[in-house]
Image 1 (tube, rainbow over the protein chains, first blue to last red):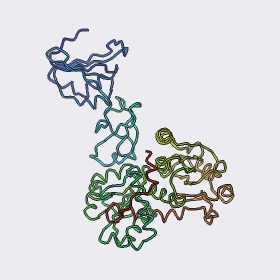
Image 2: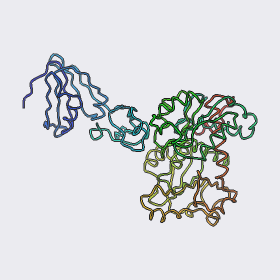
Image 3: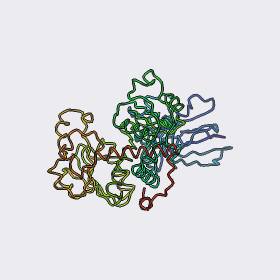
Image 4: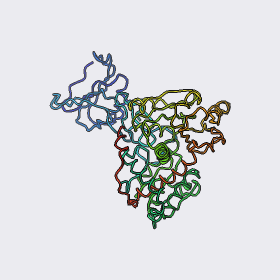
Length: 145
Length: 323
């Protein structure tokens, strides 16, 4: 499968196979006027299979949210057809309004307009706690809105 | 100084700040007349979105004994949230009237949210099953006053260790002090949550054992912290009936205990401590109520910056830096 080279843009690589579409939708790439490509189930030595997103434009991405979805993702910045920078992601210390606390006893369930804030409490287990009720959530696409 | 701060969870205060607060509470106990006017002209708002006679009266008594005044409500129907007002708006309004707020709300995290909208200190008087920091302060002051220390103690936690927030808070608080060990006495259905063991005991190197019967452990204990097995925690009444009498402390079991055992209970009790134990000098749960009022007096005075207390924390504070 051939996808043409991009001139100035981003390549989001090492996306866990099957989750590329969620990221594609989160970035609202279905509505952009420039070329984008979502390639799924690409053979990978490390991962077996992976998804890749190519974006023919240097758009702003909230890398902390991308890191929350999957810290193993890498982003290559392409300028004038050359990779000029590789961005590796990590789990962010804090995320806001990325996931929603589902604890019905949490104040965020009844107080409308309250930001859903989560703090990283266990990097190894990728666990986040609701800032209000301490309910635990695992980072990743499963919790992603 | 705690002036202007909020108290949302027990961990908001360092060991040094706790010790300073307890020293102040002891000074208030010894010389109440010195503090009887320090809050003159100040107002405590007690906002109780769910009923709690004991805690609300303790806060109000504390403020009145400091010479201050109180206002507020004792049930949600009396507040404007029943008309659909947000908690944030209620707090913004009340913090224009009062100098300090004590709030109980059934929603977890409500106190933290309130503190974000308040221009005056907010004291969490219980946010659902989440935190109840002034109960923890009460427990710590009681232990410190009766045992003379908060380190190197064997503490038995008995009853509902799964849902009891006072137990979880006490376990966390006493794990911050060195050389304390725990004996966890509960039925399998009501064992302490795994996270207390994996995130509190193990990282702090705290020793603990789990037993099923009070008799197995009572002879080794310095402190026995009894809790109520609450009916509302069970999905069916059969389970409740089967377990509710399993962990009753009576005179017969007290005979197996040491002479210097200290029996605590956050109250109210139902039948988990037989009334015959009340006259035992080792029963400290009613003294605990009084310590609760004094520690709330110390807390209010400190948050308002009116205590005038300048004594440095004693050496026990330095011993307990472990977190």
